[in-house]
Length: 147
Ligand code: THU
Image (cartoon, rainbow, N blue to C red; front, top):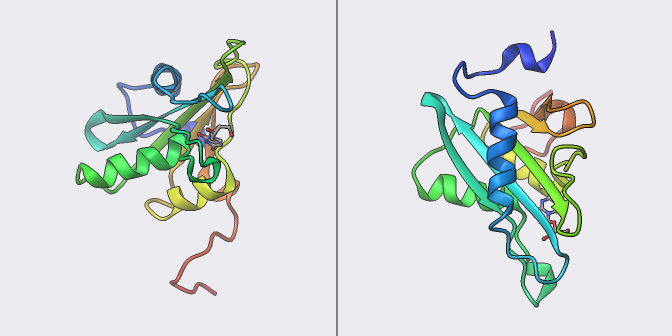
């Protein structure tokens, strides 16, 4: 069964969520890389949280859009994201809907903390594609040891 068949909302499509992620990327604070990333997290009841990447002159403390989304989610008392869309592009182009912006490894781990069955939407040249987080991060670290 394809990941899209398990899509959790009738109201918000993967394409809608990707558009929300793309909108969030406009708010990115990226004076160093000029690479804008937006994320949109989908919850039960069709609630959505949008976030973007925030860079710093101390480069290493930059926060990715996906982990910024996790921080907002927890701060707002939410815990179970059903899906996330991620859109990114260098500000000199407009590739948000053509090229995938795959979540980095650290963000995959951060997302897996809250729902191992989460779906992940990314752009592709053929439109929005839906992936399962557990396939993007096999053998995620967990303190609960599984055989
Ligand atoms: N970035 C994200 O926001 N999410 C990712 O999953 C990977 C990278 C950001 C960090 C930095 O601001 C810019 O993209 C270039 O690395």
